[in-house]
Each structure stands twice: as C-alpha cells, then as structure tokens.
Length: 99
Image (cartoon, rainbow, N blue to C red; front, top):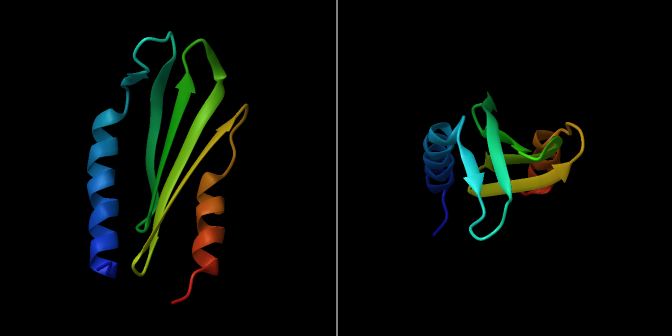
C-alpha cells in the first residue's frame, strides 16, 4: 500500500541513484545515441530534477523532474530544444491531486 513514507523513500532512493549519474554518459545499446547527464538538482525537499544533453547536438535536452505529495509520486520527462521548467509541470500535476 502506498503511503507518504513509501513515496518519500522512493524519492530519496532516486536522489541517491541520480547523484551517481551526474557527469556520466547514458548510451542506447546498438545505436549512436548518447546523452551526457549534466545536472542533478533538488530545488525543494520534495522535488528532484535532472538535465541530460544529446551528445551530437547539446541544444537538445532531456529534462526530468520527480516530485512527491503525500503518497503520490509524479515523474515528468520532456525533450526540448531549450530549457523548460519540468519542475513546474510536476508541481501542476501535484496541485491537482487530493490531499
């Protein structure tokens, strides 16, 4: 059963995992695709963010935010040619969830 503690533990586990990825390159086997993980952030206690740049074209970014509210975990990912606020997307979803 999902509880606020389970959701918080999931976010903390992801935070630890993501921190180990900072500065690493993520590759897709069998393809030339490669993403350089350039930023990992925690702009709020209940939020985790990550930015990866596409190696052949660094202007293409893969942005991700994970956020927690009560027993809910929201995980948002977007591809963009410029920086967008995926944290705001995650927060908008959280704002619509019941307390």
